[in-house]
Image (cartoon, rainbow, N blue to C red; front, top):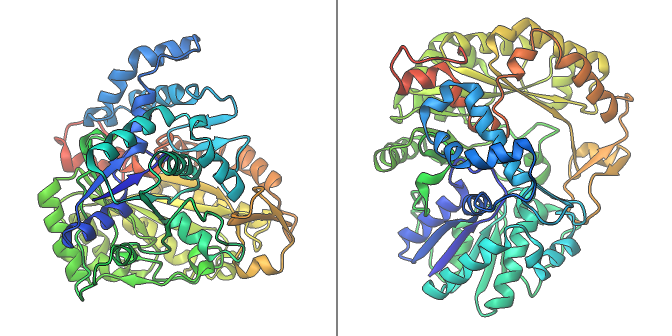
Length: 521
């Protein structure tokens, strides 16, 4: 029996996609397994502890916590943004004040420790040696002990995808290694994959972790278990997590990937290119067939296609064979999206929102990024997508080595010009991937003290440093009257994961036509 664990901290709104794929591979190879989301469980356990702080906000949050949890599972809450926002902020308040250690900052989407760096192998080992210091220890120690005693697993697999999970993951690993030394421990996931590509990577965790898996984990895990691999490796994901109906969303969000890697794979700023990750696309007919079956079996409220970028061939397949539930995902801006008829077909297939990497409003910057699209196409795509009734979630990236302050102003001008076609925005400041070509020629400054850091600050060749960028964003960009209302649409903490629930397209798909609406698109 294999126990698969999703550790804190990630947004507790949907089951993890990676473990679902692993579970499907185990199921189809007749290997007993159990899925457990200790992120969701751990947060809910913290919400049962009375807070030590007694200010007005905390008292209100504590008194209303059960109602807030129920409300976030109710679709009507998402038609009243003020009610939704209050529930999210109150629940986050209770998490923020829950750690006994004053140096730990905990939220619905992050975990930080002032004394330990998640990018330091020695600090991760410290977290493993002192699991009792972790705010989730009370819950995970009891749960893991209970499940291990009941199931007697041969192996425990931890999925480590985000930096926000690292310290908690190692605390759990340390607990298992101390209490149950005979159990094998395997760790994989996106963050592990990135770490193993670093030139500084070494066997830091010998004696603590038995197997480290880089890249898609299904075949390596089966190989570790001594299973021969057949030609058919199209394993249907399994979502039989405990408490599957307990996520903070108005129904099941079904995460589903049609590929690994990125089909474009040329952007200078992207870690996929820097790490040399291979692109693998599943055949469209398999994707369509599998989604139809999953929708029938799980009856999701929303499908989240988790690809780095949904390929045009999959978009066409979805347009021709609707999956049977509302869906959204990240796409590259191409001529396909500038075609009004194609966008209408996407909308008719159930697409309610597309995440779009616009990045910059200056063509020279886009060319230097090797982004592969032009602003004229971007403008036509924003209009075609919006006119079709699909909400747009636009990503902008400031501070790349190719951008000046004047270029950032052109991005502002572009957004103002196209603002009526933009429903949500994500503003990011560029972090330099250590494996990127630019990292070899730019003067670098470390973000984290640690040998597992993946990104770096750098000396900007145009003097456009992070302090100036923040001032520009705070004083000029966010305050612009055409941009401020868009930013105010952003769901706190859950951001793009909850944004589809506020789109007119989603509300129409699940509610009567006369329900209140928040975001047009």
